Length: 139
Ligand SMILES: [Ca+2]
Ligand SMILES: [Ca+2]
Image 1 (cartoon, rainbow, N blue to C red):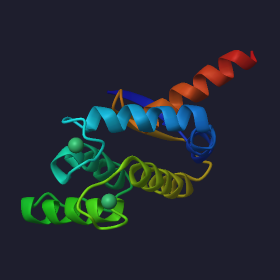
Image 2 (image 1 turned 90 degrees about the horizontal axis):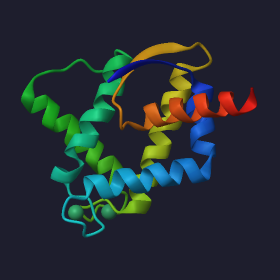
Image 3 (image 1 turned 90 degrees about the vertical axis):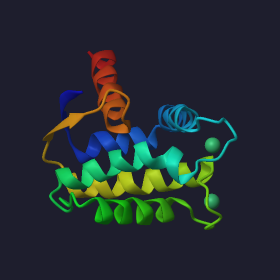
């Protein structure tokens, strides 16, 4: 965990960078795909869903803690990823939905930098790292 300064432009820049974005999507996907069958089940996705929920909590949208309501939230998040509703999430679905969520997040953030607590292996941390590296190489 670390505290980073983040704005919408950093996230959008990361998404637009195909190499960086697709690379981290693949890394994250194979990390979550514990049985390596190329598909993510609900239980394999759970860690990621908790992560996405945390983003929402940061924006004050969702502060539910009731376990029943939480599993409902995770379920509907999972359904959002599973575009063809076949009960599992493949790499393309994972990529498309992650992208969409990050664009939504970037739009929410706008251009006012916000301090956020980020997980070391989260996409947002990768977006920040990419931005820092970019700034360094420009100096
Ligand atoms: Ca799997
Ligand atoms: Ca699917």
